[in-house]
Image 1 (cartoon, rainbow, N blue to C red):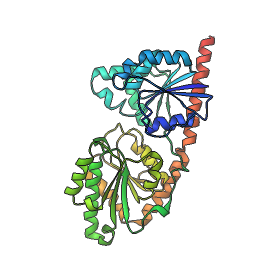
Image 2 (image 1 turned 135 degrees about the vertical axis):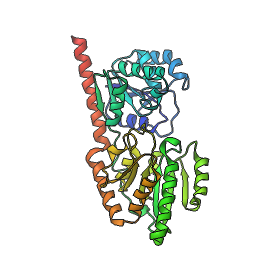
Image 3 (image 1 turned 60 degrees about the vertical axis):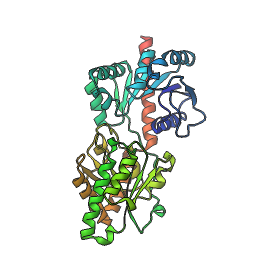
Image 4 (image 1 turned 180 degrees about the vertical axis):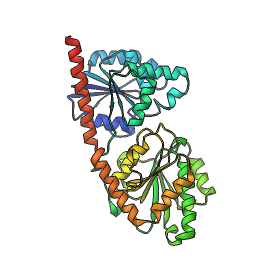
Length: 370
């Protein structure tokens, strides 16, 4: 099979898909207008489109059509329903698979009637649509109810790479942490406030534990200075480590330095909790908000706790519960690891996507024969 991806190579999601699929197909091409951030397998043939986003989603049409005419891939797999989805639709190429990611079916269509109409047109053009979560599949259908083929294809975890490594954890500290971009969507401010509140409560009842508490924030983004300032206001700057952005391959190293993982996202476009599953795979108990697809990847009270969105008090209470109970942390971490191994193994998800490719090719072949 000759497979072409139309997607941003600056996303780890794209990188993981192409690096996995290059093992499954005879030839794989990545058509992109973005620059790489993570290593891509040398067997992937990269075609750099000349115009950058956002204008490139329209101006690259002529160049993309020429590439597709020359390549004649068996399938064109487009990732992201708004920008690249528009460019993919305009090519008129078939068979076409469209993977939705989150903000493309939540935030972008909510901007205006025109934006919603654009995404709906992109979805209708696809021969098959893939969503990483049930909740996002429902959102996608609310935009385009008439989709003939819609599958759930979780973005799973490499359980060998993301696994518990207790030797990385400093037993002198109790570290609460997260791995997220520092933007409003991901509620890092909520985490800071909840951590500070949980620490205050711990000082009153468990001062020996409170003295061990540390907060680790891995990631970078537009809110960095604002969040650093908030940490100072909350008087936790001396026990808060803003690590900055790290390559995805280094994420397990930082997760394994944590004792508790928190994802306090405030928007439903947090459509699938990949980072939460990575933490669970490393044996960490998790605290998440009930935003988007996050509740789908947490068994409440078993692998962690689910708190209401933007609720500092509830988030702090969940953190405190884990801070003061070693046994809960251990048992929830073990249960989280089992959940990932049972449902979200990356290789199984790759094989599921491969099966969809085969179904679509078979269906397209039958249509052409008829």
